[in-house]
Amino acid sequence: MNEAIAIGPAPVGMLAEVPGAGRWLAAAAAEGTIQTVRVSFADRLGQWRGKRVPVEHFLRREPYAMAFCDGMIVCDVQCDVIEQTPFTNYTTGYPDMHVQVDAGRVRRVGWHSGEAYVFGSPANVHGEPLAVAPVNVLRQVVDRAARLGVSLSGRANLCGAFLDGPDTPTPAGAEAATALANELLRGLVATGLPAGSVAGLSEPGAFELGLGPAAPMELAESLVVAKGAAKELARSRGSHAVFMTRRPGAAQPALLEIEATVTGARGVDPDRLAAMLRHARPLLFPSINAIRAEPPKVCTSSAAHGGHVVSCWASSEADAATALAVLVAGVGALVESVSSPGAELEPGPAVNDLAAAARLRESHWLSSWLGSDFIENSIALLEHEARIFREAVTDWEIARYWSAS
Image (cartoon, rainbow, N blue to C red; front, side, top):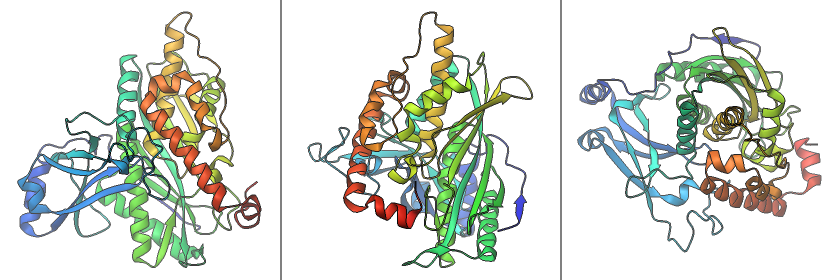
């Protein structure tokens, strides 16, 4: 992939409710151009989940709500539900969670004809947001930062790769990878997402997708959709899209770069913020192979119209809502410590091993900002995934086949 193309980003707010969007969907259904709506949510790993429903059925039941097993919001890396998660387990019986969506937020699927999609936030039967759902955590973190006078808009650069061959994956050829990457960008723009550019990387088959500017909630959803679209397009062409931090044949880790323009903060110390984000490293690099990559970096600079630009890095396989929530929480916690005399942030331990994920609770700012329910369930899942990785893969296999240090 030697070429790069760029398209002007969609305006901030493209994913916000648009008056008359429900009427647009009704008109498209009447014309026969939309037959199906994907009622969607993102799981705790940032994977696109949901069900397809006929568009007529969707329109008849506005506002639309759909029930899913609540285990899907805390499933492990193998998409299994486990006993160890305190939020839901065999004792609770995995009751339904409910995802309610608004027809005013429906978007046409730009890379596949005849379909539209809409995302909702997981809640319980009483309509109370689930505290373990990353999208709900991000919303509460953004709202808390706003009460401190801090607002953010963000951009993201997401690295991925296209591979050929289902049994022995090899990097896709440069021409095929370039065509798929460009098709991905056109599809996202046609969807109305803030997709601005795509470029080839030095690694065979690898690409970098640029998204933004957008509000944090919009950016998180756009990243979920971008990954899903890449996988769908690749499968339709006989290839595979992957967002693994380390993959066969790649020397460099694939990362997610988040750049946030922060206004309302007196100043952000990049060294102190970087130290705080190291406490949350398992949330930013949530797999054994990912956490072997470099620690989170933080860079800051002055914004054109005041404020600060803060950049940090996570794994490409990290959940976007979680990564954004960690960054916003870190900035917000710093602002709180500056505005409250005597309120110093405890140093806390840097967690560099998924098996030591229980130390996340020792950094009290994480539980304060992200919520103890979210942290406790994350710890159970990270420790579980460290265990199943150790049972399946040896260090020799990693060094031999995955080029991990």
